[in-house]
Length: 148
Length: 367
Ligand code: SF4
Ligand code: SF4
Image (cartoon, rainbow over all chains, first blue to last red; front, side):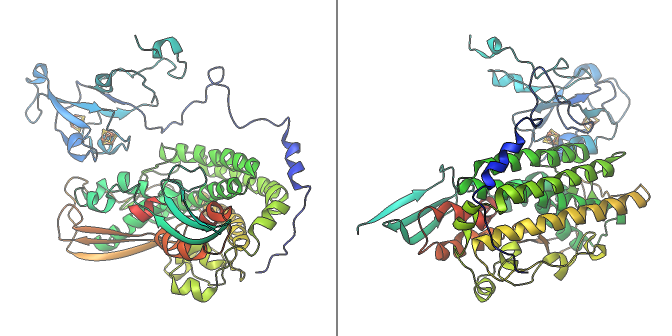
């Protein structure tokens, strides 16, 4: 295929036509674009339903999951273990492989994904049924970000 | 005149990511160049040996950031060949849909990068803005925007959500409309013409000798495309003709992407039409991710990524992880061997522009 090669000096002015058109971006925090239904954000885990099998920790490609002891779940039916997954969000890549292999369906992912803190320990926690940062996590008060 | 050594990158905004070139210039003419890769070496190939077969995609998608789906699919296809499994029909179409959308978003990145390197920043803003509509679609389909972790050995993870095909078509209509505006602002721009015409001309014989692939090869008149030569996913059923040009200069390379952009829009429309008429249901075979063993052997599978042939060679010793995996990336030829030779005799201002025009993706050199 041969293309006719020609150029115009006036072509840059065509960009002016875009003035007054609706921009691509939204004005956070006045307008918040909600994540899609399938968005892979933080985990939730129904600790009652979870049987501590450790499949999630074995499949995790980033070694982000550590099984930690939960003695209060020791009395459960045979086959279940008194362990629950603890996730290090400094390592997690949000691939959802753990959710896929969870045999009980207790481990799930929710749509929220923002966490800001100056303490690295806060990125490691044991997900439970409560959704992390359910309040709009987009609206950040800059005062909170300042170091004490 | 005194010759001067200059370092381009890895922090230079005109370089495609973490990559560097050392150029020797005389006046403003390049007399020698040496590509310095390695800033992005993360040991992908070695790390894969420590992962189960199903743990591959979350890592492998990082080999090419703007075109992640081709990496996932290439690896998955090699594993499927080795395991002797066949992806369900609908899964193949969904896979092809993600691949073509990935090509579109990678080409938009390309238009932005090349435009920026010759000073046309408006087009860079436009293209990155428009790419976001494709990322929205990805978010809806796969749950992630950049690293989709969606194409696994056995097929794509999920079926399309309800009404997704219509939304894809809407975005395609939008992109087609925008492409006409791109034509006016960018592809018919005198600055673009003057900066790219007759710059770094590549002959077909040279492309063949240096194993140049993808749009760079097609811009020299060499009609190669893995989608035609070794069809995969839904490509055997899709109707498209290879586009080639003969000039092989930077202008031809950019226009090659411009023409293929339109072709990809048409391909996406063919796929969504077919997906609508297909019964919903099984898209993926799911082996037991934790204990999946693959018979001893080796396999190679290649995909036509937005940059050229991207191949995966995997060896299994019958265990739960690859014994060895190797990547055949297009950028090692384009970004190191070809680039070092073609930049000689060009002007200093073309150091970054040529890098973009060859569409070099440094992580696939370093992998
Ligand atoms: S979350 Fe699921 S996979 Fe993980 S230990 Fe509990 S039941 Fe097992
Ligand atoms: S989402 Fe992926 S990386 Fe994160 S904890 Fe689960 S398996 Fe590990």
